[in-house]
Length: 70
Image (cartoon, rainbow, N blue to C red; front, side):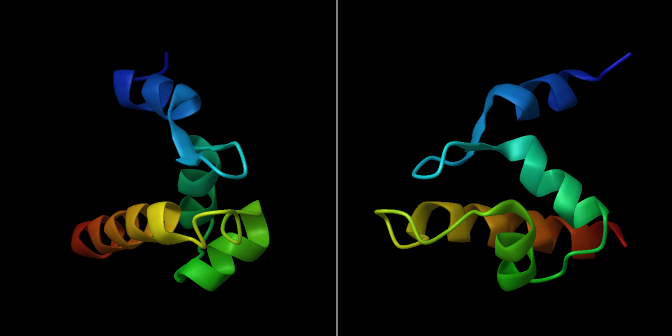
């Protein structure tokens, strides 16, 4: 059964400009992506109208969290 956090990640936006959900970004990180550029290549985030300001900040926080858990 999915946790509440996993369920929320499926509905929360990861990249508003491109319409990509948060869970797609989380999957990329779980599969070994370690930089915004790697995550962008895998998921298609970034390069929208905000020029990665929103998703870039979110990805930086997620990558930092991942490093702390390692």
